[in-house]
Length: 387
Image 1: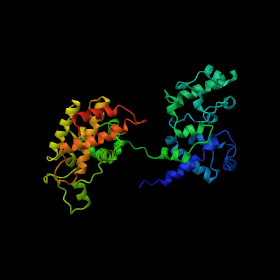
Image 2: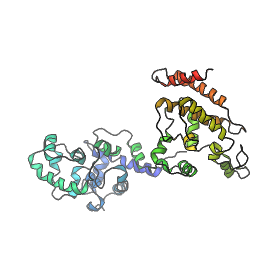
Image 3: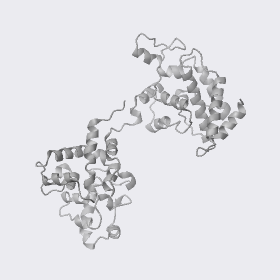
Image 4: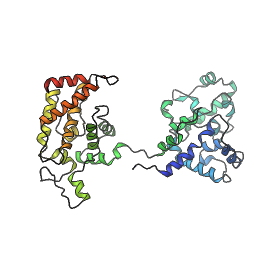
C-alpha cells in the first residue's frame, strides 16, 4: 500500500501555514501572537534571513522555533535558487546589505528579488525605473543591490518560468494557493529517478549493460497512447517492472518448488530465460522477427533489449513504429497467455490475435476525437491477412 509519510505531511502542513503571511492581506491572528515574542523583528524577514544572520530569537515561542527549524531544514527542497532564493522578499536584505533602503522598492511595487530579473540577469536601473516608476533617488540602493547580486545569485539564471518552484509561485501569487499541503508534500518527498528502481537494476544486470535514464524513461512510456487494449497495456507494464512470477522467484518464496524452467526442464527459470533465452522459445521469437520484416522491411535484433524492452537504435516513422510495437506487444501477450503451457503460441495464433486487435483499433481510430491515420495501418494488415 502507498501510505503517506506522516512526518513529511506534518512538515508540509506547517510550511503551508506560512503562505498567508506573504499575501497582501491582513495576516492570520497567530502571526500577531508570535510576532510579539520576536520583539522588533518581522516574522517574514526572520523566516527568509539565513540562520547565521538572524538576530537573537531565543525568546520566541516554541511553535515559532519549530516552524523556523522545519523551514531551515527544507528550504533547499522548496526553493530552486541557493543560497538566496529568487522568491526572497527584498526587505530581508537589510540583514545582508548595510543601510539598505527596502521601502523605496516596496513603495513602487517591488517586493521580491525575482522582480529585479530581466532575461535571467539583474535588470538595468533604466529598465526598473521604467517598469516600476522608481525615483532617481533609488539609484544608490540599486548599486548596493548590484554589488550584492554578484556574490549571492548564481550566474546565469534560467528562465523565470522554470526557476521558481510551485512553492515559490504560491508565495508570490496574489491569490491563495490551491491544495498547498499536497503541493509542498510532493516537493518534500525524496526524488528518486527511474534508475533507482529494482526492476531497472535487474534488467541492466541481465543485459550486462548500463543505459542512461532517458532511455529507461522512453522504454517505460513506449506504449503510452499505443492502444486501448487493456491486456496489452497490462503485459508491457508487468514485463517492464518484472512482476511475472517465474520459477526462480517462486522457489525463493517456497523452497519446495522447483526453480527449473518449466519449458525446457534444463536451466534455471530466471526472468530473462522464461521470456527470451529458453531454447524452446527462440524459434518463436525468430518467427516474430520474420513477421516484422515481412510487414515493415525491418530486421530488428534478436535481443531482449529490442524484443522485450522495445528499445531500438533507429527511430522509425510513426506508422512503422506503431505496427512494430503492436506486433511485439502481441507476441509478449501470447507468451503470458501460454505461461504454463508446454508449447508456444503459433504464428497463426499471433496473426489472428493481431487481426482482432486491429479491427478494434481501426474502428476506434475513425471516431473523433481519436480519429487518426492508424486505421490505414490496419487496412494494409487486413489486405495481407484477410479473415
